[in-house]
Length: 250
Image (cartoon, rainbow, N blue to C red; front, side):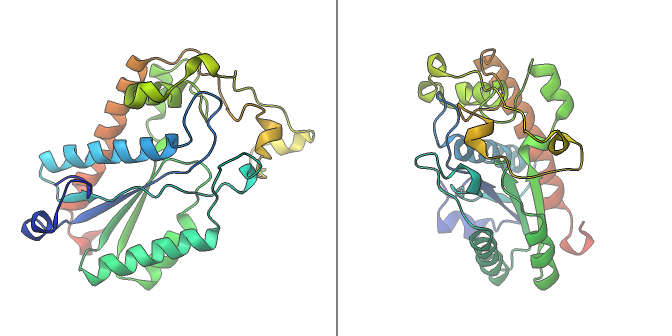
């Protein structure tokens, strides 16, 4: 079993999935050198590879097509950015949960590759109302030690990490010669930089080239290392969830 881009109904009937993974990205500017589809590409290709690896180890997992839009309200001044409201995100999740539970599938993994997406309140609500286990994997929060070992300065948006990953996944779509430095302007209020204090970044003012982190040191090799480690780590999670009886979760 792999992704629904390859599977047909006969495949599914013969091997009913225990776990469904839903990749979720965003459509937004990524500095001047990465495509708008960066988050979507990363989310799907890592989730799809992780699904394959998990299934090779005995899991019964299916990867859904990725959701291409996320929460981007502070980037709507940038052309072609598409932002979902929180109501829309919740309703999509609600319909996915409704569909899966009607089919007897009780394990859903959300694989998130966009920092602006926030799922935790929705998951609490949906698991309280429906007979389903929902697990959130925030890709950018995973493997902090490996990230430090692989990258000199990973960045948090179109920086060295994401650029390396896209060089490995879709090198032809990366135009590194156009990249800005990904500098971040400081807030006027110093208190906004204190730990535990937060407000949405007015993205174009804080990040003039829309990037956050310098992509100059990005390489295909770094991207391959990160892709493999992230896929393997995600596969282990999928395998464990697949092999654990629903009544014993979490």
